[in-house]
Image 1 (cartoon, rainbow, N blue to C red):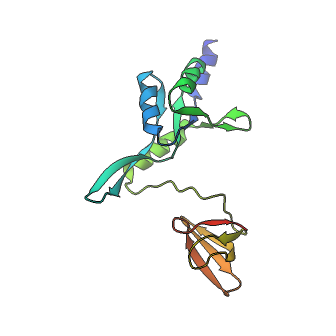
Image 2 (cartoon, rainbow, N blue to C red; image 1 turned 90 degrees about the horizontal axis):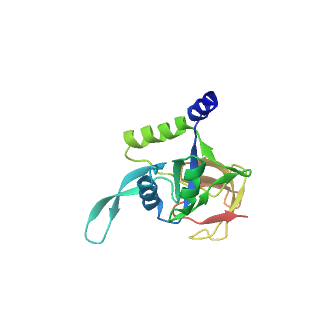
Image 3 (cartoon, rainbow, N blue to C red; image 1 turned 45 degrees about the vertical axis):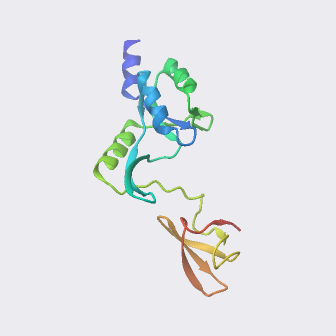
Length: 173
């Protein structure tokens, strides 16, 4: 029995928790007060207000944080204010290896300009429709994805356009 417990601890993994919007840091704080090992990766970024610039600390992954908890603690995690549930994948709780968590910690401690960008499952070959701006309702085929930008082949215009996903809304055609 002792060997099984040691093996289980050696292979312990972090679970992914989904939180209410903008509750990541509050949930992390609540979990820590319950002595539950949690990790909410944050980044410092400059934000502009009307009268000043301010450096604020924001979660790297919106509405997500990581916990390492045993079965009893998992119930406490679910009952923590702001927690929606554990993220599930194929009917099982999603987990992340300790090595990946360490990579995230190293990355955020050594770089200032990190940002997690969520693209809506766009892949090369998809046909996308532009939903705003000068090219409203034009369609193009995705030929390249480069960070926050998508290169669309516009056959009607006989050219390729670089579309910034931050500034342009697109949908699948």
